[in-house]
Length: 362
Image (cartoon, rainbow, N blue to C red; front, side, top):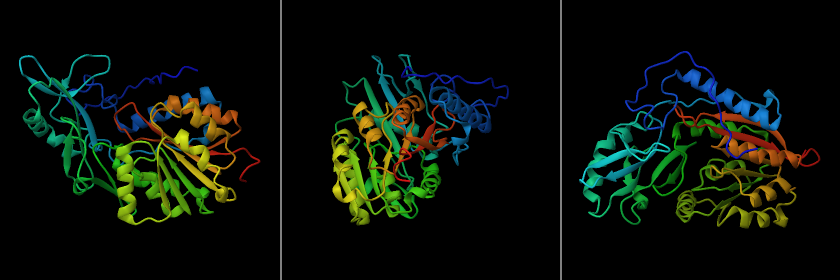
């Protein structure tokens, strides 16, 4: 199977007027010209087709696609490019794939309203900060539940924030902090629904040890911590580790261990901790778009010390590639949940619940 699998669209006859004046030009959105219900149907069918063709699984494993509470003005982060011409003119906007230009924007209908309204001011501030010799800059603008907007991308350490300026979102009454320089899910509105879905699984009945792999600032470790007896968060990004430690200290967690480094390096040792061997152990994996490395995939698919794996992926092709290896090692797919984290775009998030071979962890 090729690493890149094209997800072809079905014929759509019903059209609506896009909200964005540069729809089709900037390349960020693909579905603003059809009703949201039709977009959901397309994404669900495309994902099913991909899975059934390459994994030979039945339709009954698929849950209905989880819609986003908001299909416009939901993104809490935008990544934009600044370009200064030789004549001194400055544009701020998006770079379409395979095209060497910028589509200038002063609004974005899929960005949070606070961010979309801020874009003209972002350009003004960026021009002021831009050193004379700079011709190009990559800007990041973000906000959170507090509605405050911050941006960076010009100058060293410009993406670092002071603790008082950290963004946060709140899930089940617990604040989870993040920054400009850390990964965090871009659709905050869908996160509480996702967490309730995960918390409702039977895998938590025995209060397992929970491994949050590629754990970032601790989103899943914190939101699911009370379901587990002990939590191990593994993350290699220095910026994310800093925020994970801040989150741990803020809440005063004591059954929560943060491990700095690569999952590939730490996972074998974690899964062999003697005192954990008799317990039910659950792992959450939310890897980069490329999916699991061959080393991590081999360790996870071969282990006999996990009662369940939750695999969250924003890239269906790499997810299918990795799942094929799990199935070859006799793991079973229990559920597949498509999640529309990215309305109006071609992207889709997928949560897969994996159970070990039948002779393990009944």
